[in-house]
Length: 341
Image 1 (cartoon, rainbow, N blue to C red):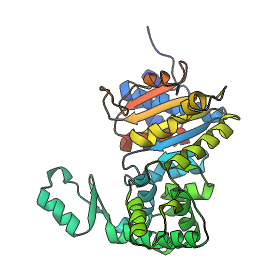
Image 2: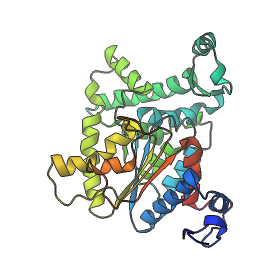
Image 3: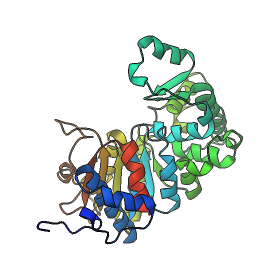
Image 4: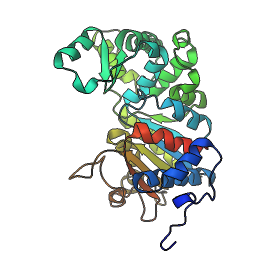
């Protein structure tokens, strides 16, 4: 066929197709446009890992409430993820779902809710995220209770730690285990804690548990905000991690959504090179973003990957992919491809 692209599975070519049901379906049907980008990005992801590379995954939006843990936890266990940067909401909402899943309320007609119906949800202590309501008492307050004890214990011992490290301690302690309401294997935070995965959480204060922490400092249950380490210290830790890992292997960047979860970690390369004046710093070796944000003036989330070249984040020949779609649909499919499902 004239002009035919040489890629496994394209236009009915079964060459290289996996016998796994999901992979076979996607490679047969996902041939063009955003669908084809899913295949290309998955193949690039797999190639980086197979060549000994590492992958940073970033989580914006409400991916934990969307239960991305169903596939992300398996990616972590399979060694396909070497670090995660996420918002405070994604850090905590995976744990909320772990202990309160049966109490969540789905609102399929969320687009039609009136202000009065939204008030009714508040009165029932149901915090809505699109079509899903997180139950305040069973989720947030249940986790707050054990986390406050962990904070107070650390403060009494003169200890300081990052937000994710405190959550790791709570998960490893087993204090929440009697409340588990999903298969623990479907929690990406449990998988990350078991693997002692590096996690970076910029802007953690912009989360429910971040607010809870500040409230407890203000009312005297905790003595100082210095107990929980913050964003600048996370950047130092990220810089150390990046230098150590990139000295041995290339690191890719897989971004879900935009905002601080993506902008914070990708900036570590120009910081090391331009601000610290460190020579021979490896640039990110792979880049993919799943986003439904449109390219517009000044938009970070909607910026095309090539814009990052001018900032010293990516190189001209870095494999770059952008999938303009709903990450709750695309990410599990792409992860399934990488896992060979």
